[in-house]
Length: 479
Image (cartoon, rainbow, N blue to C red; front, side, top):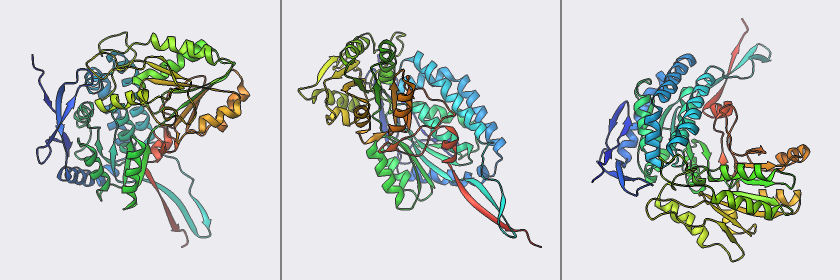
């Protein structure tokens, strides 16, 4: 029995189109390893067309009132809610994620985040007008930056698309968004839904590969480039954008430390760490995959965490008992496997450490102990269901180990000592510090990192303001 291969298309100026030269990319299911769709391999002509459409739509969209933009975004949020099952099915086809978890853990936050930015459109705050020089009044205007070139990743194709287009559109910008070449299906469906509520050219979707994304960033039209992806990709975008001084918004890799002190509730901490480490197969920049445990409870903690890993199940999207699905693609499976294969002799695999099954990119929940600070698996992002464990002797060493990587996106501290928690939240050099929890995000609070994890904020009023520019207007008030 042959599976029908669907044809996905770009969405440009309110129309679905194939690539101008007809080239396509095979889209492979991470569950079956079979081709389930083709998508356009967009080239320069497609990029030009999308940018032209976004630029032409910008003046009218910029001049809409915040209330009008809010109304459109609220309609989109309602439509996403109504089409939730279709979106879940497309996202699961994209990624192999469990249907139930995608339905409960991704769609509601996405809808909420769109509604948040719809409200933010009407609540831009700035310094009050005033006279700072005799006879002259100054005011500050916040304006949209223009056309935004946005590149989304494959780990959360729908949610990361929302994080990008919602603040951009709310602020009055127009968008050209590229999904990952391995996960275009849900983004194309989102374009179909959104097209009912937005003027032509305001939101455009270009499918393609790295060269497509590169052409978008290098194009002279966008005023801003935004990417969620690897450090390597972020550096390339920043270098390219620098040539014509584009704004850049980067959300890159992570290597989140989870610092567990001797007074932590071990059962609660293990439950929190295993959930936040294995969720989405560990394919999350904020995943709780680098655990630092006080030496006095290290052995007990490792034993409990290894048992939690053994009790965690990966499997098919329609299996209600699974905690996560496959890795996204063959290259990612190879990368995760490679980290385990290259472990130093002093490391010990406490659980997992192997592929699951002979079809699909499934990898077992894995715990590795006995590691040193300069080990490859400690310093580099695995982006898979692999949790490492190190021990520390005191608070100072915990901070040293935690901060001793090039990433600085998220972290957590587990302790009953309030003063210690406050000291650690100050000392940890990460954009987010959770205390006695790990991974919750809310629309009202900023998400973003330091160092090689990038700059710019997603979510919150800070994320909204990133898509605006500030203009000083000064007028004479003398007769």
